[in-house]
Image (cartoon, rainbow, N blue to C red):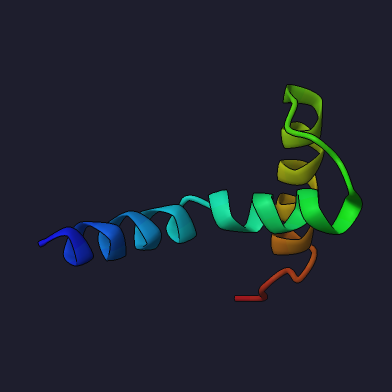
Length: 55
């Protein structure tokens, strides 16, 4: 049962971009802060919406 909940928690962290944020912090050598989360979120949104879909 513990393994199930660990897997579920890992899935939720991946869906919620928490794992991606941790990778971002490690890659840039930064610590968690509100400003860093904002920078990460802005980069994610810019990357997502940079490729506009037509029709």
